[in-house]
Each structure stands twice: as structure tokens, then as C-alpha cells.
Amino acid sequence: MKRIFVFFLSVVLISGLAGCAQKNGNTSRQGNATGSNEEKANSAKGDVGNDICQEFTADFIYSASGKPVVKVEPDFIMPKTACRYYFSYDEHFYKGVDNPILSAGGPHIFVQLENLNVANQKKGMEFLGATTKTDSRIKMENMITLRTNGSIWDIKLIINPNRFVTMNYEAKALTDEEFIVFAAKMAEKIQGNLSFVIKANPINTEVPELKKAGASQQTVASSFLANLAGKKIADAIAMMDASDSTKQMWQTNFNTLESLVVKKIEEAFKEEWTATHQVFKAELDVKVKPEGERLGWSNGTNYRWISLEKNANGEWLVHEIANNP
Image (cartoon, rainbow, N blue to C red; front, side, top):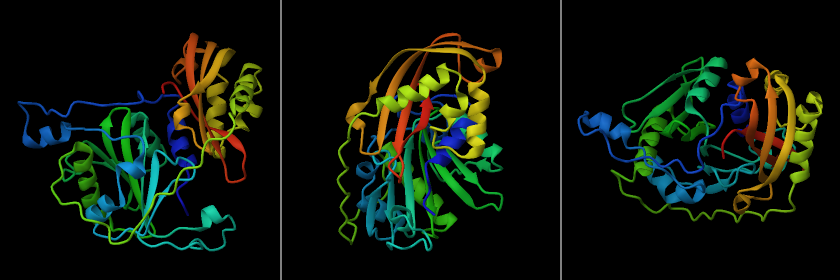
């Protein structure tokens, strides 16, 4: 079934409130002048814009994969920073699923830009039983995550310690070997140093226009924080779109708070809001137990960026809590 972003949330939460990177994590493209050619290539990080469907077009995906793209679809939860590229598409691909958003699909490549701590992502994946490795054919710092059977779970192209492009494929869209070759070409695109020609995708595809953001859901974020301030931990956790195991981790985290006062909450990055995604910045005054300091909290002023997502049932829930924008 389609990859749902609760998975990404769970990986982040495994490592506590480790935080996200700065909004734009540009790094130098210059390698070490005294290093090897491979070291120079791997140090040339580059960067990408925040609109993934526009950053990696159907023409590029076709040229990098060798397979015609029949549909380009912004992810319905994170439409700006995540995109799906289908090699075939069926409105009822996933049988027995009533929700039309979740039932449609087909063999495709999924690409997402993440502003999360790479080291904590690695710890989180290992907690879930996965292993990681790198591949020298990808001339950029990378992390390949493997399932217990040795197959590729996903590949991360690391721009800086807190920013990366992550990719996976579904429904046998590629083989693992093809996926590594594809990732190597993605790395070239990020670095701005292509070794191949971009050809026109043989099928016309148009990225659907994103629906405009609706009314502000600041009351949802405020209610969530009010529950934390009132030590109504169960009520706060019920407002999150996380798995049961992830909610248990949050419960442990929130129970380290001795007191929390909301000093200010305001809309953030409103120009990037969509019909299903909004972000709010909160200034908090916190008193925390010693173990809470190991989970990203500090005594005194803390800032949190709270991302809300609207689920398929139309309910707004807390999707992500970050230390940085």
C-alpha cells in the first residue's frame, strides 16, 4: 500500500525530539583539494528546492530510470516536499481498499525532501531492525537502508547532516540494482553535474495544481499544547497521527515535562500551506526532568514547530513536532 508519512514520523520520534535542520541547508559544492577524486565527489552535496515534483520532472525520471512516466502525483499529505512517479497507474490498484486516495496506485518511485537529523534516522531504522550501508557508485554521501531479507528499503542522498532526499520504489517498479543506478543519477542532479542527456518523457504528464490552503487550524495546535500544559498527556497524544508504538514513545517524552507554559503561538511558513498541511511556531517556557534534556528539551525557553496534517477523514492532527524549522 502507499507509503504513509506516519512511518517518517515514527522514525523521527524513536530518537526523541532531535530536531530538524535549517529550512534551507545549502552546503559548499567544493571537495577537499587534497582528497581523492571519490572524496571530492562525495563532498559535493548540492541542494534542491522544496517543490519535489518541479525539481525532478517526468523528463528527468524517465531519463534516469529508462522507464516512461505515466503520472506525476504530489503526495496527498506532503504535496510540496514529496512526489510519486508512476510507470503504470490503476484507480483500483490496491484491492479491498475503499478509500479512493489509498486504493489508486501502481509501480512507482517515491521521492521526498526531509529536513531531519540523518544520524537519528539511522538509529531509528536500526531500532526497527533494518541495517544501513553506502554504495560508492552514488557519488554523494548516501545511506541505503536494507530490510532484514537484504532488499532495499530506501536510499537517502545526504545534503547535510540535517537535510536529505529520500527515495523508495513500490510494486516492483525497479530492481534493487536499477534503483542504485537511479539513485546515482539523482545524486548527479542534486550536484548539478549530469553525465547523461535529459530526454522528453514519451507520455504527457501534468502535475495537478495544489488546492489552496483553507482556514487556519491554529486552534488545533493550541489545543494540543494546552493539553500538554495541563498534563493531559493522553488527550495530547490522541491528537497525533502516529502508530501506537510511536505514541508510547511520545508519552515517555512528554512525561519528562514538569511544567509547560505557552508564551506565544503563531502561523509559520504560510506561503507553503496547502489544503492538507499547516505549520505553527510555538514559544514555550519549560521545566523538565533530567531525562527530558536527553530527549530534546531544555529548562527555560523552548521553540517548537508543529506541523498539522489533514487525514483522509478530514480531521486535522499533529503530524510532526520539530526543534527547528
